[in-house]
Image (cartoon, rainbow, N blue to C red):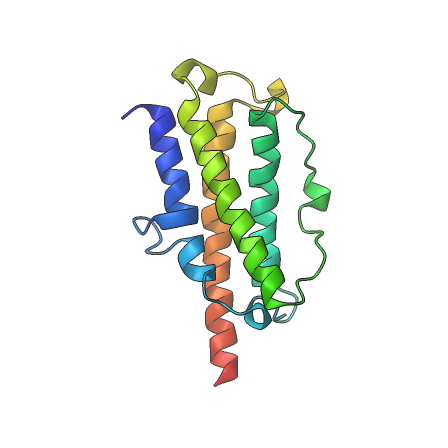
Length: 158
């Protein structure tokens, strides 16, 4: 399997359908959850909703680059989202998250081996490969947080 296909597969595993590394994925953890659970604040931890929005923020920002646009995302805004106040808003967000994730994976699959070695918008950001691999690692990091926060919320309900 070529590198772009391997990266796309790994990305889909963490977001949409895999269990190999973490025995779960974002879709498995977030689908079917109610908005009250995902917006429950525990101490000074980010909520599950904010963590999911944070990952989607970066996916969408990279998708804009794939479409030929500028890199417009900024770390300082990556946790700055309006609150989710209904189940409908949460479900709409999830639909957008899954759709943007599939778009991301499709873009990655279309890259050539050579394109993976090109700089991602600017030399200071490293290569496309580094950014895609970083997105996968970043997603696993926050997936782990989501799993733990869900367990803490569940334990606090008992």
